[in-house]
Image (cartoon, rainbow, N blue to C red; front, side, top):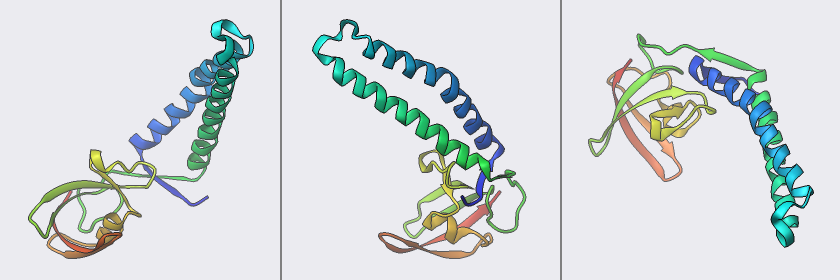
Length: 155
């Protein structure tokens, strides 16, 4: 698996999720499956509940496996407040061709959440911004076509 870039905050969040999944969530799903297999008050819906409980168990185990893989080769990146160029961990303020101004933090793909202002270093915009400085005009090759942004501020 390729190196995963995470901030310290993202690393802690994933470690906490694994701990939660291995303990509380596994127990919750095991209890749900046990109740479904015992028949309980479900009657004719018992087969459906057993199937749903097994699916929930498979999801939990799959998520644990995925998170362990992500954390097996991780590089912690520091949030960079002083930088000359955009890199993973920097906050960058950009302006698009229509004059819309947005501020993003460049993070690894596992932590990306555009609605929270965190874009991936491998996203079209994130990868295009990497290595550029304040004042640079950057062309972004996105699925909808090419658009340009200007870097207003880094940091």
